[in-house]
Structures are given as C-alpha cells and as structure tokens.
Image (cartoon, rainbow, N blue to C red; front, side, top):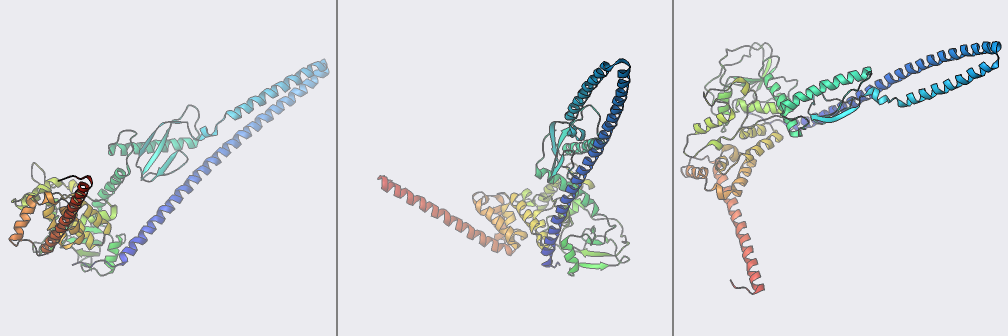
Amino acid sequence: MYNRPSDRYAADRTAEDIEGQNDEALEGLSQKVKLLKNITINIGNEVRDSTKMLNGMNDTFGETGNFLGGTMKKMQKMARRQGGQWCLWMVFLGIVATVFFWTWLWRRLQSIDLSDTLFPPAASGTYACDISDYAHEHVGGIHAYGYSVSISCRETVTGPKHPRLRELETERQQLLKQIESLRIALGRAEGEACNERELRTARTHSAAETFAGLIDCALPHDVCIDFPRWGRQIWSNEANASPYFKDLFSSGFGEAISVAANEHSVAEPADDHPPYSFEESDDETDSFFFPRSAAPAAKHPIPVKKITVVDTAYATYRVVLIWLRTEHIDFAPLISSFRTAGDLPDVAVAARLKKLGAVDDETDDASSPAARLLCAASPKSVYRLADLLSLEELKALALDNLVTQLTSANAAYELYTDVATCNAPVRDAVLAYVVENWDTVKTAAATQEMERLAREGELPKEALGTAMLLAKRLADRQTEQMNALCDQEYILRTLRSIFGLTQ
C-alpha cells in the first residue's frame, strides 16, 4: 500500500543537517557578537564614569587653585604689612599641604579596583545543570557549553553598586532559580551535576510531550493521517513537515490525496477492514490506549491532504512521528516475554498491557488520557515502519532494543515471527543470539512449542528457511567446537610425548 520514498529523501535530510549546522554556527557567532557588545557597553560606561571622575577632579583642582591664589594674595598683603617672615612660613606650609594632598590622591587611585565596579567578588560553590533554553554568554560570569551550563556564584559586598552590576545580579538570580527548578525535576542533589544522557532525555521528553499534544488537534493543520480502523487521526502541516513527508507528498504517495474542505470529515471507525498483513504487536495497544472514537463526524474547515493508513497501528505511527520531530521514543516490552507454553495468547497480551500501564491493575480499565500521551511501541512494529519509511537510524534503535529483550525463554518465539522471517537483519540478530545461547535455548519451553507447531504444520512457510539457517549455524558451531577439541587433544598428545607421560 506504500511506495518507498525516493532517493531524494537522503539528499534532503543531508541538506537539512548542513543547514542546521550552519544555523548553529550562526547562533554561536550571534552570541559572541552579543558578548562583545556587552563588553563594549561596559567599557563605555566605565569610560563615562571615569570622565565624570576626572571632571570632578578638575573642578577640585580649580577650587584648590583659587584657594591657593587667594592665599597668595593674602600672604602678599601680610608681607607688606608685617614683613616677609610670614610670607615665607605660609609658602612653606602651602608646599607641605600640596605634597600631602597629591600623595593621598595617588594612593587612593592605586587602591581602586575597577573589576570590583563591574563584578562582585566570587564566592565558593558551582551549580551545574541543563538550562539549554536559557543558555547565553555575557561578562557576568555565565558560560554556556553543550547541554550544561556552569555558573560561578558571586555575592555582592557592601558598598555602592554599578548600574550594570545590578542588571547582571538580577539575571544571575533568575538563572539560579531556573537551575534549581531543573535540579529538583531531575532529582539531583544540590551541587550534583547531571550527565549528558540524562539531560538529553529530560529535554527530549519535554519536547515530545508538547508535540504529542499538538498532533491530536485538527486546527490549524492541513495534513491528516487517517486510521479508519480505529477512527483516529494524526494531524500535521505540509509546510513544516519532515523531509520524508515532503518527499511523500511530491512523489504521488499511493494513499495521499487532496480533499476539499467540504468533502473531508472525520470518519467513524469501521469494522470491515482486512487483517494486518503482518503480526501487529501494537494493535492491542491501540485498543486500550486509543479506543475507537465515538465522536460524531465533523467537517474540517480548510482543505487538507489526507493519508489513509490501514496496515500499521495508530500507536506505532504516533511514536515514530514523535521521534521524527523530537528524537524521543519509548519501546514496549515484547509480548513473547509474557508468553508461557500452553497459555492462550490473550493471557500474554493482558500481562503486557498491564506492564505498559494501559490497564489499571485493580479495575482492569483503560488508563487515563494523560498516560496515553507518550505511549510505547513494539520494537518490531517500529522496525517495520522505519524500514517502510527508510529511517535507518530508527531501524538501528529498534533492532538494538529488540536484541536487549531476547532471553532463552522467548528467543524461539521471536525467531519464527513474520518480522524476523521477512527481514534479514532481524532474523540474523535473533539467530546469533539463539546459536550463542543454544545450550539453554534448546531446553526452553518456547523451543519445544515451536518444534510441536512445526511438526503439526502450523508455522508459516517462511519459517522453513529460518529453520534451515538455524540448522546450518548450529552445524558450523559444532564443527568449530570439534575442531577446537581436536586441537586440544593434539596439544595434550604433544605434551605427553615431550615429557614422556603415559595416558
């Protein structure tokens, strides 16, 4: 039902990455320009203040000169009236006073520290946390790098504050409050730094929650991804769509059609849809997290481009679209992890839903809407959709998560699923685990059940090729073990012959 996106998607994605890097570089240059601007402003303020101080000194010197001039006139009058002795004493005292004044002024100027005028003395302690949304640089001692921001605490001493210092102090207090809020949200002790992975997870989780709330709103979007099986829709805009969807719309995607405003309406769920072509692990997630909408049909006021999806679960598509915009994704546990030989499939499905939080443990009712905002999806379903959309990075993430969930108890179940038998990378990854852990896998109940289904002819025909590959890998493994054993026996015989030992 889908046409794979054209090769132009990779080029568009590369161009977008380059453009993003250029934007980041321009943003860095912009921050540095702002830094230089702030420094220039501060220097200008200091020059203006210094000029005022020098003007004040000139006024003081002028007044001093006037005083000395008046004093000299009085001394001349006194010298005429009482002789030259008084004049000499007054000149001597004036010279001494002038020397003392200039000495005091010189020492005063040397004691002034202009850095204290700009910044208060630094105190002990450093707070580190992620404030990427508020990160910036200026001369107040705040430095941004990557996902974390380090701020050196500075406390103000007694004395008058420079106007710019008061502004910096206000900004510092605001940033410290934001850091404290993030520290509490991340559960970190005071002064304890957060590693990059935790900071990235917190940032992407917040962005994913915001985006997940937006894709459920019809307005003001012009793209509708319709899931008639459950009567659900995901909304987006063609203008700011991801490179994949831009390529999808322009290449004539099989299920993408333009619908006029008076023709499009939110359709009610239907029951006559054919079954999925693959085993869809997230179908049960849809039924509990996103039950069929009972809302009446409503017309969309603007023309939209509609994409009908009938072979992928709503939860899977939702999780993948959120990952495309925010790089956040939660993988659900495999159903096979809850499967027990002889039990009905519904038992494993119910246990998995409770693990996901889709069903309340006490009431067995569906979860609240808040819990559905960021639901998890099966790594197998995500891998299949990522392969369809040519999302190589997401395919690798899904495959890695699938491998981490393999155990001796469920490996045989996963080996013969349709996703594994029809996708060579998944099949090879599960095969490698089974062969490496064959001593415990061969005795597991899952292996016994798969062998019974094979004898009864209930396995899909694609499973035959997987079984033959398993037999070949096990034979190769046994051959390697036999060769290693023969090598050990040869070494033992050689040692016996050298030392003359008998068996």
